[in-house]
Length: 193
Image (cartoon, rainbow, N blue to C red; front, side, top):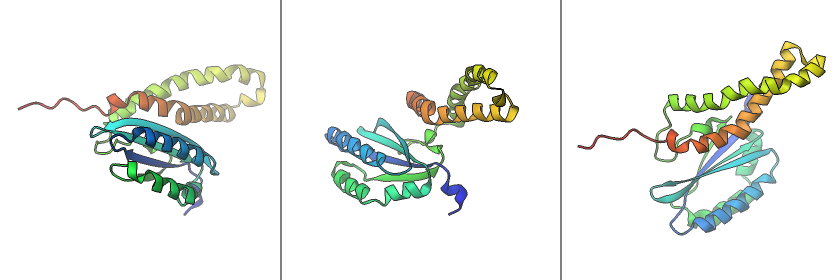
């Protein structure tokens, strides 16, 4: 594994379809799992997207780690193995995991569905990024005025870019994709014969 890949944020997407009547027990298990995962080195956060699939509760959990090696340590841990054993009886289709680099999970489709059209992905991304590009430079402007060493083109661009990327990746994009999920995954009405 190259250093470049190892140093990228690694994402684990976990999809679980829950058996009828097991939602409450599953949510309790999920809280326990989140607390356990947080204790592992390199854990950067988790987002949980509850929905429905085939008439059953469906949960997509997105865990981020600082690198692939630290994510792999969580995946191979005895804690996670024990947690998976505990949840098996609650799952309608088993434990489905997918590891990816970076944050491609934003527009990953729900099981059994196609990915949203690219124009919808671009529209949501535009809605998140445009306000950042307009407001973040204005927010930093007073500090740039007080600290001359921050006024340089490279330094100020670096500070603004880091602020935008961190805000988009960790704060806004997960929430906005959750908010727009019904629209992102909607399909045009099919003609009835």
